[in-house]
Amino acid sequence: MKHCKVLGFLRDSAFDKLDAVQYYRTYLPLREVGRRACGIKTETVGKDSIGGLTDSQLGGRDIYTMCRMYHADCEGFIDEIHRRGGLLTLDSDDDLSEDYKLVSGRGKEFKRVLGMVDFVTVSTQPLADHFAQYTQKPPTVLRNHVDSEWMCTVADRGKRLIEGLTIGFSGSPTHWGDWYLPAVPFARIGRDFPEVTLITHGVMPRYLQFAAEQTSMMRLGQVPFVVYPVLLSQFDIVLCAVNAKDPFNAGKSAIKALECMSIGVVPICSRFGPYLDLEAAGAPVVVVEEDSRDGWYEAMLRIIRYEDRRKWLKGRGPVWVREHRDMAIGYRQWADFYHAIVD
Image (cartoon, rainbow, N blue to C red; front, top):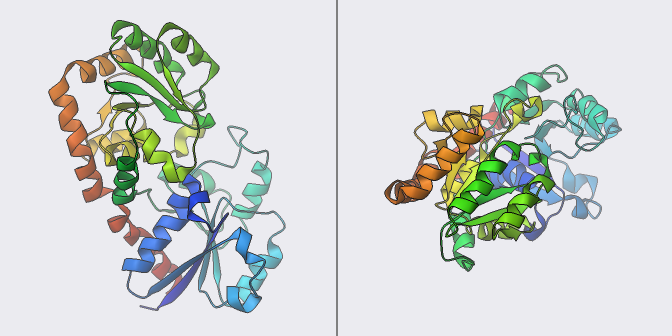
């Protein structure tokens, strides 16, 4: 087996400025591969630091990897990597092709770069299948994993703002349509159980405003990823809702449920492929019996009413994630991939 060196490009070299995508798809896997894999040396460099490095300092690696960082005029960059005997991989854990949804206005550029790089890695098989029409080789699936120890350590540093039971949504603007179906039963839960506090974290869609007006809902804004576990720990139950009928969502992973479980938060999930896969693998997730307003209400109702069941799910979550979806074991996917393309 050939020894290899891997250099990962980040948007920023400072840990406290990493976003979730850069963390999960570049920083964390390369850190664990470097610590644990035999025959692989890894480093990361921020885009903010590259200007101060010479070509010699940047050269000498077998593999260069970046997540969501791309420019349509990167031929010279790729040619220089190849001239020095290296390979370039591009990672994406979301569908940036814009074949189904406008994300950044750079879909055409992204698809062009997919065909220029040597390898493409993704977080799910449906995303690999979709990108395959644009890539030189079939994309490789490297599933998302979490750092349980870090998640718990950061979460434990935070102060709980609400003493009683809490339930709600946590996510980015891309979930605008995902929360629409459970929004009404969510508000109903707030009215039927005034002792339960409703929470939204991130960017709240306007259609959830009615829930805020009818209940004492707490709104938590967006924060840097470095303190994100503190915000997530404010929940007892998170509604991991995904509109499975939206083709854009076909490439999404189960990372939200993994994050929740890792710190003992109970995820109630849509009947969505990655969440159904977790359920089939024995993960302590709650999947709604049907993706309907009644289905969501009943799922929330059962977890709120049956305290013993909720406590079991809460206690089992961190154990299951450590055993099955922690990067301390998940790094092997990345290590095997790097060895395979170099060998």
